[in-house]
Image 1: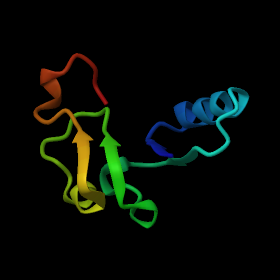
Image 2: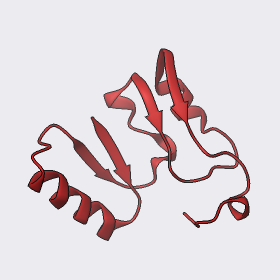
Image 3: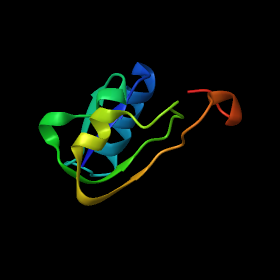
Length: 83
């Protein structure tokens, strides 16, 4: 399992929490998830938690055939939380 967090303090807290809970196989990267994690793909599923104006093409390229993506698409002002 792989996850990307753009906010450094949240990434650090997530890494500590995952380790404490025994999730030793989760790989965490700090950075902008727009480009995804190409060397780890293709993925059967991609979940994006920050709104995007469009579906990022790099994420579509990393989605396995038959894979599913969940992503909020549209203006960030439409969503209650800013990313």
